Amino acid sequence: MGAHARESRRSAGCSKIVEIELCLRVHNLWLQFSTQTGNPGFLHRLQGQLSVQIAAMEDILIPLLIRMLVTAAVVVAATAAAERAGPFYGALIGAFPTSAGPAYVMLALKEDAAFVAASAVASMASMAAIAPFVTVMVWLAPRTNIWATVAAALVAWTAFAVPISQIAWTPVTALLANVIVYPACFWLTRNMGRPPETQTRKAAPWYTLPLRALVVGLFVGVVVTASQALGPVGTGLGAVFPIVFLCLTVILHLSLGGAAAAATMHSAMRVVFGMVFALMGMHYGVVAYGSAIGLSIGLAMSVAWALLLIVFYPAREKIRAAIK
Image (cartoon, rainbow, N blue to C red; front, side, top):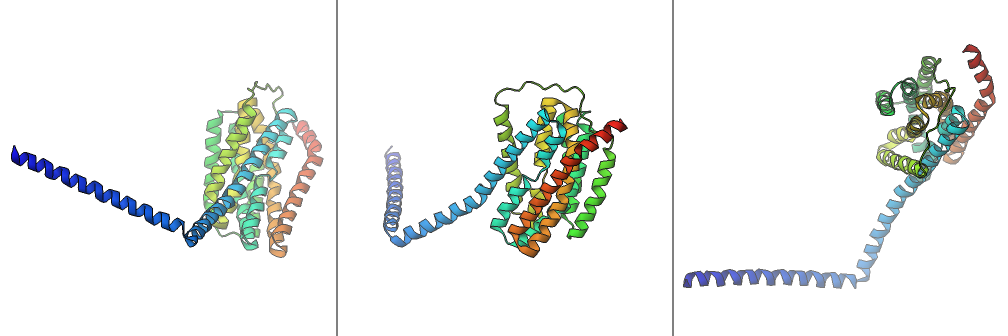
């Protein structure tokens, strides 16, 4: 019993010593921190580090939030136009570069003209992956459910986008790739995408509109954030990723049916083809005159293409009706 008592007292004494040592270490750390916080140099360094971190977060978050808000607004507006004015005007709003536009504005504020010009060429080449993406949607939307349609379209986009990202493109070769791919996809969908003669809109709850904006904004946030660290090629690819078409198709398919979604995408492919030339004009404008003028040239060419389509839209519809 005596030995056992001595051993217990020894263990208790060791535990007490450990506790005292821990308390002394904590006390010393607290004294060091208190001394450093009273040092103006320490506070200045801490303030500088915080300022750098806040500036880095602003560089990422502000462009990201703007793209999220703009893209969400475009999808909501395009959906409303497609539901009320028809597939063509919904496609016109959805295909206008309101998603890529803010991305390039923010890019021009952050990077030099050479980076913006190189990204424009990458975006030009990446446009060749959008035509197969839309073609698959036009083919499958009236025939199957929305999730199978979206999955197949994303597979088609990936099948083209991955090899495109591995090639060193010039403006001329990127233009040639699009001139080959788009007419082929136009031909494949030549007898498809007619608007449904009777269109029944499913009643939507009050929260549908804000939910659309939230879902699209979050999706854009994921896509843009993933493309920021990939250089000009990754940035150019991410800038024209068909997020608007993807979300617009899902919303229209769920609210109006597959035929309405296919008709909208059919028109969208014709609209988005003009963005290839707008990106080419933007590239040469940035190289020759700088980012501000180059981006303005791209915007002007996009507007001109949209106006041209609006002018010729009635004649095109008459021709399609006569063929039918």
